[in-house]
Length: 346
Image (cartoon, rainbow, N blue to C red; front, side, top):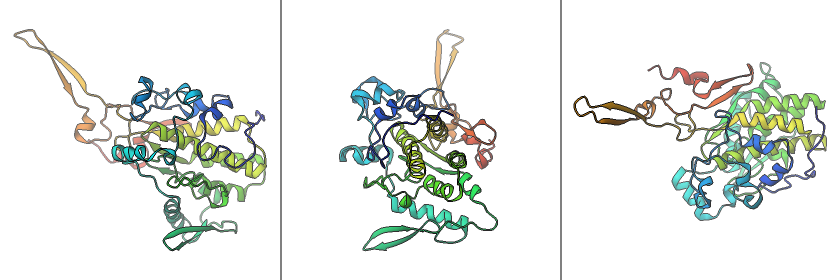
């Protein structure tokens, strides 16, 4: 284990809500490159938007996001939605139906899942509403588990945020609507926050904490269409690891642990068209060429992707997204997970 640490200074959210890619690049060890990796294609994630096309051909829809495009003189290219100007936010809402969820609503929805899992409430916090504003107060006692369930099951269980944007349901470093940072870890309400609270309450050694923290990340998934949002989501999860590790051990994590968490995140937070389970816009028409028997003329005919034409999720000719099955150590197509493969037998 490489116990060398990344010196960014022990201070909660040292970069504010906007994590600078220059800073991540300065850590070395290919951390930024890992966060930009598309595990399905083996290449980098793509922009999947033309919002940056005015900056040149490298910033158009199908181009890959590389470190040089978002660092150095381009260090401010990717910013959280709340940092974008009003017109940019309106355009993205119109083109991609991009609407982010406030932390209080994420908390309510995550609480609802927990109430069913624990068969009681409250579990992690108590919600109140005053004059139309929503507040929550963290519970202070150690979370107790039902007789038929264990804390290890909770930490390891699979959760996924669909069309995750900057992943506010998973990692609540800040309110994605107001931009207000949530510096008090006890008040964070995302799934990784809940899981890491349980890890904190039930482990005593650094070795056990790290093992179960990694299990927590392995069970935390999300997917997103737009590449800039996807990178922000990945960064938010990685910085959450920093926050909780530093809070527990009063020092920054070893570079090997940071790299392993980044690798888990790059598998679990992935780029995907959530209706087709393929890389965005990877479906394409096939060209069929025939020759007229009389004139000899070559006739070209474009045949639409069968999955797109008929709405069949397992018949697309695009690039189906792969994820990691952490129990077996093997990859699996996302559309073949659980009941998805049984939905359609055409």
